[in-house]
Every structure is written in structure tokens, then in C-alpha cells.
Image (tube, rainbow, N blue to C red; front, side, top):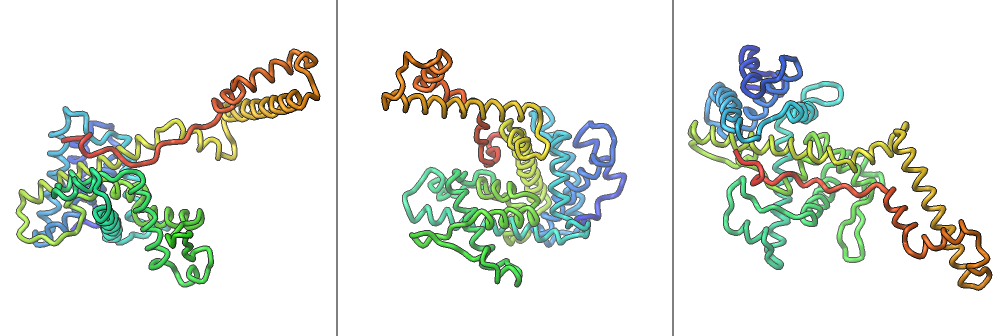
Length: 356
């Protein structure tokens, strides 16, 4: 039975690496491929608990090999970058900060915990006005065709997860800390503080590798390989199909994270938060400060003119130009041009966008 650290044999690892990618031979690459097989095999143990562990591991190896052959010509494969992102996720899922092995089953339990919350939100939507998402769910969609929740619905899943964590997952010393106490708005609805959101994000990263994994599950659902539903008489063919489906889902997740992290706006925000910002960020700050000063000066000149304390004709050419730019909106336009634009929220690529 493969564990979070017990990977397949070195011969198999080499074979897997050649199947998944033609990348140059290196330790990180093969370790990532071994982890990918381990991830599938461990999830499959719950899916097909009556099959021998050796058969499950062999099926996971075959799935990685066949999967690459099926999608090789369809631009849907673990790139080396995506494979390394998977490796990073798996490292957090399988080991703690001290490098001690964690129970991989915890990841599956937390993934299913996210699904329970997702289903609660969908049921709540069904009790209200039907939406395209809930109507789709009512028709009995398959695992890869789950209702896709919108941003507001995913935010509700996050809020409910935070409420659950603060009620059920606090350590004794945290329970006595008022920062962890639930707060409600005027309508009696739980409202998470910034500190509590930081706590929720930390827990999701610790248990699931990244909070983006939870957001992906809330948006798109969880495939049969990971959902933990009790199944009897799983045939090898059913297992192989579930493994392909699970590999497709996981690769879609890692690709989604890569695309999200590649947003220019995110890179700018990281640079802004850095203790040693780049020269470009320093120039942007200086330009923004100059634009804000010009706007304040323009407003001051407009107030002086409107109060008849100064006439436009008595102003210097520089002041007249400043006032004109302020009143025509050019100063505000310049200011906004130097602001870092908000980045898109992570929702993940739709499973229909990446078919195998």
C-alpha cells in the first residue's frame, strides 16, 4: 500500500517520468511523478477498498501512463511547471513543517468536508429562487459536470467553513482568546474578522496544501475518486475510469493555480509588499504621490476660485494648467493609471474547458 512517502520502485518511477513528460532527468521531476502516482493510489484505496493494494497501485501507474498518451495531442498535460506546482502541494499535504509524515487521509477528509459545505449552500439555494447552478444540480449531473458555483456562492462556502472551524477546531488556548470568538452582524449572520480569515486560510493551507484547493472544490465539486462515497463491487474498469477522471481533475486544479498566480496584478502586489521593492514599484509610488499632490493642489485652486479669493487670470500658468487638469478629470485619470488594479478571484478553470 503506497503512503505519502513510500513511492513506487525506482524502475517504475523512471518509467512514469518518461510517460508523463519528456523533461530532462532530475530528482525533482521523478519525485513529483512518484507523488502523483501515490496521490491517485491513496485516493483509490477508499474508492475501491475491496481490491488488493498492489492492484490499486498498478492501476494508478497505468492511469498516469495511459493518461499521457490520451491527451498528448490535445494540449492537456502536466507541463513541467504544473508538475512542480503539484509537487509543492503534495509536500504540504503529506508532511508538516518539521518534515514529519502526516496522515494523507486528513487531506481526503478535509476535501470531503468542503464538499459537505458546498452541498449545504446548494441546498440553501434550492430552498430559495432556483438559479442555473441549482437547476443543473437538480438534474443529477455527473462528477465532472457538477454545478459551478459563482463567486458569491463560493464566498458563502468560505464563510461557513470559517464558522465551522471557529466552533469545532480551536485549540484550548485559542478558545479563550477573544480574537477567535464568533461575531455576528445586525442580521445575526456570522461575520469573519480579518484575523479569523487569516486563521481559516492558515488551516486550509495546512490541511489541503493551499486554500485554492478548497475554493476549487467549492466551485467545481469533487470527483468520485476523492469523494469517499461507499461503493461495492468496483471493477478494474471502473477503477481505471475513476483514476483518469481524478487525474484530469487534479491537473485542472494545478493548472488553474498556475494561471491565477501568473496574473500581473498579483506580481505587482507581491512587489509592493516586499521589503525591497523593485525600481518599477518605486517609480510607480513616486508617480502616484505626484498625481495625488497635483489633485490636492487642483482642488485647493478650485476652492480659492469659487470663493472668489483668487481669480483664474491672477494664477500662474502652472496653476492654471493644474486647475484645468483637475476640472477636466485628467488629474484623477493619471492617479488611477498608477494604481495597482484588483486581481481576479481564484475560481479555477472549468472542467469543460480541459477535456481529455
